[in-house]
Image 1: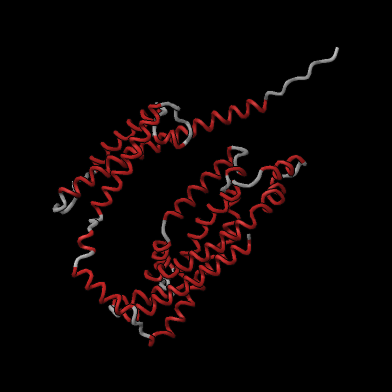
Image 2: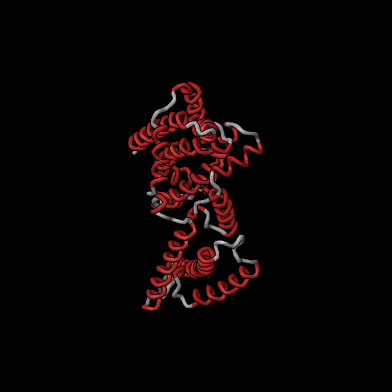
Length: 358
């Protein structure tokens, strides 16, 4: 008698277990996001109301007790809302129930969230078209722009050296960021780090760190490093270097996550180890996107380098803030024109290079 072949069900169990694990993880993220949405909504609404009606008060009436009460309410509401599988976060993470209740709650709360954010922003920023187009404001703008478009050429040599310094700050920050960014990008790509719990933990830890670093603007990093290493181009270069690593690592890792899996599976089937799979199956697919992202980042860094000079990061920004503080608008006009020209040239060059790559 010929024995019947055994049916292999293990892969199906693995897929099902992974799906259950992913659903649980998405539910936890949905709960946390719902708590944030509710907390954000009540805090912004309360703050906007007080800002509108109690602006004459020296301090807005918002104590730690208020924060604690609102946070507890947000936790309760967020957990309950997510548990019904009808919340906005459940919809975002793909675990919401497909019914009319879900559609109704998502649409209503989505519009509510948008409207209170817009209205609160309008109130807090004191947006006023009357002030913008008042006769006094227009006269002041005419005086400033009149001076800006009559640049003082006496500082051209100093401004030229400063703008060259700015370009080199951006260039060096971009170049030296490439090796650590490449290294980190492979460890922050989800498809390469989900094999076991340890690698998955490394993935999440690195993503959290990079998200934190990226959330701090280069301007703030420039302030930190100007205190650390002193005011000058070195502080600006290090600030751009740190922020470039965090930003490009995200772009690189997303490019890795979007690769075709066919070559990877084919190389894996030959018995290749992890390094060989990455080198022969992943790297050839990501070279062009990596080059494009790096060139584009250099373009961004040139523009950022002009800003970080305002806080001691060196380059043309330092000159700009000096003359602006002295209200010497003719000199400021020359510096602005030079910045605009250099940024336009760099943008054109980077665009042409990226077109040539593809």
